[in-house]
Length: 390
Image (tube, rainbow, N blue to C red):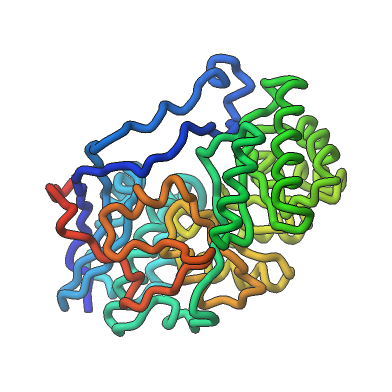
């Protein structure tokens, strides 16, 4: 089998968002500047609205395709400019060879945007491999280790007004979710008042769901070491399961200092690329949870390696949930000790999976493993109003 083409498709349709209440964005690194801190998310459009998403399709001389998406425009640019010329004529089932050679292709390509383009190509190649052998990807990886994987409810975009958040948290717990992650809005640019609001959110949620229900909180790289050190000391009485990305992940020394300052577990990885960057975090003891995203860190091929590395350090891997399927298949082939959860971004997955049939959603807090070959990503032709190659 040989790769004959790598197609980038822009799909268009009409999307009607579920009725979500107005919520808050997360803190961001640029919020130290008032002009950025003042920005808020626009209220989501109501009623039918146009939607456009990009998918990558790897085509072969045996008619077996590999599909992945939706992807971002910058990933499509990397695929078009750098990866397609290399892939044409190659054996698509040799995923280890293709990954290693693509990783060596660009002198600046071992992190950042280049890696995100490589990652989605790798995911599409695994979809193709599963279809070639008529098996779900998790079976090719050694699974299943369980019929379904617990999903934690990721609450980005919900209101963080304490009482409103508490009501939502209780609702999601009642739906069967065994853990939740909430997002801080306030950072160093918000002064003492912002610290108090962050603490009020933590305190109110903990009181609502009880002392042992897993609660995680995400600062999205919006803090610095001084601010984070104050916050973790204030959080200690509230039994956080983890504090995510309080700092930029490359500041490994600062993570080590922050970990030494408190008992609050630390997590990062969404913006970490390849097992070598993960290794530095593990060897230094900087963090307690790895959150590398297969759409960005190097695809399924690399995430499996990261899981093996992390398991040797007794550190769980809970992949960031930019999309779902690639992380779900890896989870379904790993020990529950190594990958205890997948992330489900509740306000975003409906749009991410709009063009998919079936759509994968949690039931009683868990997501069943796909039974279709490959990733189980099938496009719903009835929703596609136009398909344009870009």
